[in-house]
Image (cartoon, rainbow, N blue to C red; front, side):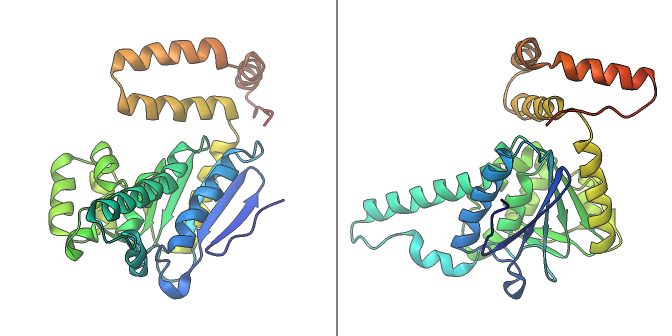
Length: 270
């Protein structure tokens, strides 16, 4: 049974799931419930064999206005001891990091479909996705610098692996907006679309194309790309040799080869 959430809306069409941020009256700002539900949702999707790709989008006028500032009231705890307050804060931040890392850890490719506002936590969120697509009116900002803090749930760790270092530094130091076209030029966005409706249609089509491939091969590809990001070339080569020795499906390989030979579409088990 598809779970229900308070701050998310989940739809499944064939082998593709679409997760919508669903606090439109709050510009999809990320409150405590949303942080926890994101992890719960993506861990659930990871365990669903029939789900082969995921689209992450948002309802309302904005994709995500970042952290709901009411969360700051509970991050430090109530202890009078500075060290204990600091430990409480650190554990909260580590938990929030895990909430978003569940998106990256999800074995299924996650395609972000971003419209209008994507700032602060929204950038942290989309950095965890495999690919990102945007509307012409979308803009991105590492806004934490403007409230006197250093971004701490993933942007500064993941974004330098996606776009040039100097661009990351400029965005992080200034907090300025990066529009969709610039985001595409620097490699953060794969493609820019005219509006949200067109974007969702096209991104879901890409997700369905991915879902038509061997699920094991797709999951292995995501595993290799993430591993290679964080390890040397030699380590990555060794890992893929070991992975394919154990995880390459002879059934899927035969189905793919036969489909190629007869110019037809292969069918794969979940």
